[in-house]
Structures are given as structure tokens and as C-alpha cells.
Amino acid sequence: MENRSIGCTVKECKHNNNGMNCCTLERIEVKCHTPRAESPECTDCASFCRR
Image (cartoon, rainbow, N blue to C red; front, top):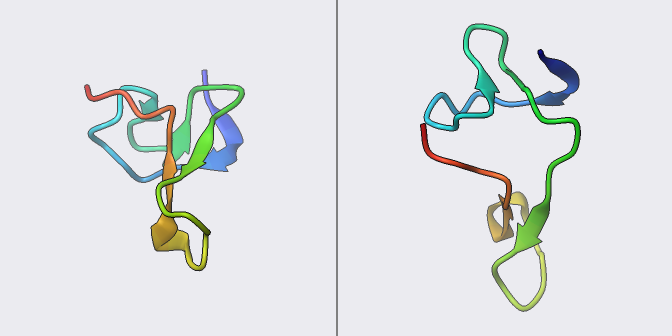
């Protein structure tokens, strides 16, 4: 299954649909790893699971 609403190019994640550049999850969690999100680099996909 693929969710074209969630684009993803992280091939190391088990939720990445290889070749389609999208996530297989219906919902992801995004977290901030700094006190305040000032740029995309301050956030991470908390749903990542290594393949």
C-alpha cells in the first residue's frame, strides 16, 4: 500500500514504498528536536523505522 499524500525518499525506512517515493503509513508523527522549530532541520519524522 502507498500513501501518495506523504512523500518520502528515505530508502532506509521500512515504511518507504521503494520506487514510489512515498510512505506506506496512513499517519506519521513529526517531532521537534530543538526548543523551537526555526527550520526544517529542527524537525524529524518520529515514525522512522530502520529497514
